[in-house]
Amino acid sequence: METVAHDPLLTQIGTSLFRLRRVWARPDLMKKVGAQHSGAKPLQLSNLMVVSAVGRLGDAGGEVTIGAVAERLEVDPSTASRLVGHAIDAGFVSRRASASDARRANLRLTDAGRRVLDSAERHRAAYLADIMRTWPETDRVEFARLLTAFADAISGDPMDPTRISEIFTEAESGE
Image (cartoon, rainbow, N blue to C red; front, side, top):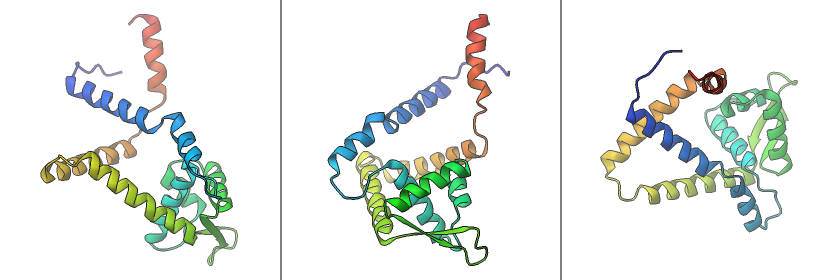
């Protein structure tokens, strides 16, 4: 493994990413949201993820398949199939046979799914606008550019899980 000199900027970035993950992956978050929601449809974060994926893929044109949703969500096809099934059961997504291959599903948002997607986008934009309300426009533009480049780089070269086990191996050996 290549040794990297201590870089305070990399430490700051890593710490900030860890904090963001902790904020957005709180196990109690969806439980609290679900407790506040008295609607007839079950409210699950996975439904929102599927609605977003199906909506974006559908807006791009063409058929939306479970395989495309799996790729968009970066999960395996069996997981995507299960998640899509939950979104269908909740009434947010519909499934039809593909016009080009009857063995494949063509997914579409229902009216309820489109309302969920539109509402989610409005709320996300309002939240981010509030968080960044004191930022100058030039900083917002630069942050968007850099964050997008960072996300693209990570998506194109995700961390190898064996590197995590190397941390423990190295620590146990005292190196």
